[in-house]
Each structure stands twice: as structure tokens, then as C-alpha cells.
Length: 144
Length: 130
Image 1 (cartoon, rainbow over the protein chains, first blue to last red):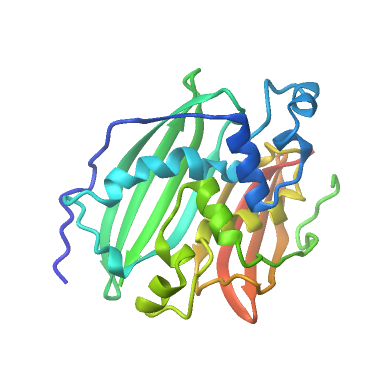
Image 2: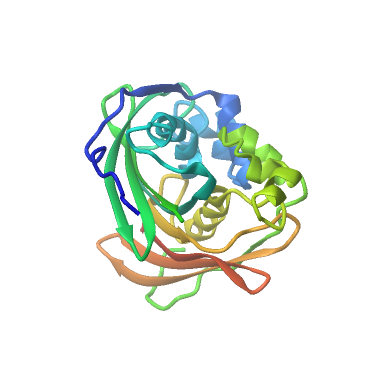
């Protein structure tokens, strides 16, 4: 397998995401997060948040869409029919609440061959409207 | 939970994704990969049937480890490796153990098992505590 590593270091334009209250509730319900802070704006305000709080894994929603251009980039050259999601890491900063405006930038961190498998590692960095990093994601995709 | 100690097991989380979960999660997450929502497509690429989204399974690990922390922004980091496939309508058990508590941060290791298969391994989380 001749693996093209030229795309390592490539970055993509930021992708904007506006966090909506109903989307936070919908996501929280889909993953089983029942804490009232994810569902009830009144409870969230009482606890000191501006609106409902996104569960940590909501990072999938605001940063995942920024991955798409990289995953489909011919310069990266992923063979989708053989791709599996091998691993995932998220590091979170300040909480994300409904009303936030998140911008996510993606970089190709690594392309490498190990044991006959191709590893494609992407990093996403998501920043809120105050310039705070709310989440850094490391996405490892393996092509068999 | 305020007196976490290394070696302590967190309450096991058991969850059975229902038949339609992958459709709801696809809509909620925006991940409409047909291997999760199209039985025929999944079988056409050699899978036994529709499989769960790995990131939904990771969200169950997140829920399990969050019981060690205090509130919805206690979770500082979570990393996992996906191994094997998860399927709807089969119970998943997430187990988690505290490995270290230092400077207000607890480190927790976790894995998820379905029908005897480890579908998530090497789960590692850091949470703010106390």
C-alpha cells in the first residue's frame, strides 16, 4: 500500500455552528442524558448558565460537520468503503450552552501505515464566540 | 460522590438501544452513514445488519464516567478505542473504575461490553472532582 502523506498539516476553513436549544435537547435525549440542565432552560439559568447546557458529547454535532471536507478531500484520499472509526478523543473547555456560536477548524494531523492498515488522524479545534477553546477532538479513522 | 479513591468501581451503566435508536441518533448527530440506518446496505457491505454509531456508544461511556464528577461540565476529557460492532436491541454494559485522584482531577478507565464482546476498550476520562 503506497500511502500518500502529503496532506499532513493541511487545514480547512472554519465551519460555523449556532447552538440551538431544541438541538441540545434532541441530542441529550438521543444519548440518554437526563440531567435537567440539558433540557430545562429555567433549571439551567438557576444553576448559573445562560440557557440549556450541551452534554459533552454534543461536540460531535458542532465539530463533526467540520470533519466532512477533510474526510472527502481527494488530497487525503480515504477509501470510504474500507474505513472504520478506530478511536476518538475529546478534551473539553468551558461548557457550551444554547445560543453559543462555535467555529471549528480541522487539521490533518497524521497519515501513517501500521500493520497493513492506514491510519488517518484529524484534529478539530472548536472555539466559542468569546474565543475560548470549548473542545479539541482527535479523530482516528482506519482504512483496512 | 466526594470520596473517590483509586480502585473504586463506579456504578455500572446498563442500556439497551431500542430498534429505532440509530435513526434518532442519526438525526440528532447528523451522521447518516447508511451502515447505521439501512439494513440492506449494511448487509451489502458484509455487516450482519445495521450497527450502532461508535460515537453514540462513546456517549454511553461519557454518561457512565460522569457519575464520578460533579455536574454537566465535570468531564474534562474522554478517549476511547472502538473495537467490534454494537447492535440495536442488545444490552450494553459500561464499567468504569477510578485509577487516580490528584489535584481535584479523577482519572477513570472504562470499557463497554455487548453480548460478551468488548465494543469499546481503553476508555480513559478525566473529571473535575471536589
